[in-house]
Length: 270
Image 1 (cartoon, rainbow, N blue to C red):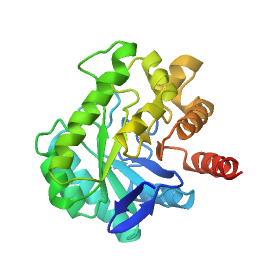
Image 2: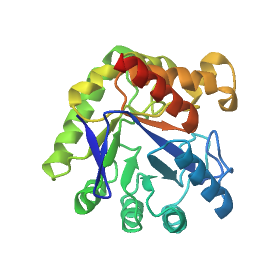
Image 3: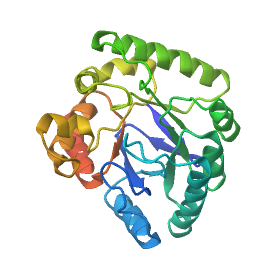
Image 4: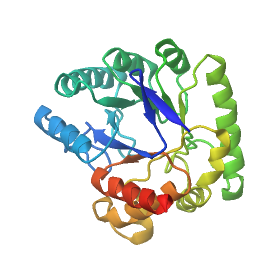
């Protein structure tokens, strides 16, 4: 049975867990600008926890391709300030920090973050040193923005990337690793759906699989709607992902995802 160690507590993954998204940026593709004030941030944290999330994923840099670039110092200060704010009101919360910078990762962990979510796949040469030093779980994302692949070679190349990178990480004594296929990161719309269909393949790596498809353009492009209107597509893809082996769901809509998991648990128990 897979599990996750967060702040010295062992979290069972026998039932999938939810990671609620908290973007404290003004230009995120779906909820940019909603959670800027301290009051709005704390209300969002309370909502995420009340609706059934185990983890809060805090991000101060937007991955929206059209977003303004956020410099390291701004991200550093924003993460530091808001981690202190959140944990002063919710001291028992498990917070993952969404960053690709080792300097930000280190201050985040020192301020109480329980996990690092690295969308770059370890591009910062110092990131693994930080993870090893503090022994926190690490989300390894496949990001293919610079090396376009054909659909049929996508999964073999991804497995090769994960295998090689995990070997490097494990050799440093890091064992709490989560695999994120990186939906939307350097993949075509077709490839994103191909990954949903073949998600179970990544179970061969024997690490928990995280899926983050919530409100992404892979849905709105197909359905011809906006991210604000893509709740049905998000629910559908989250359900398929859970059926295909996902154990951690990174979502905006926590309540809906919790209901999916509850229904699937009932079905699986019969």
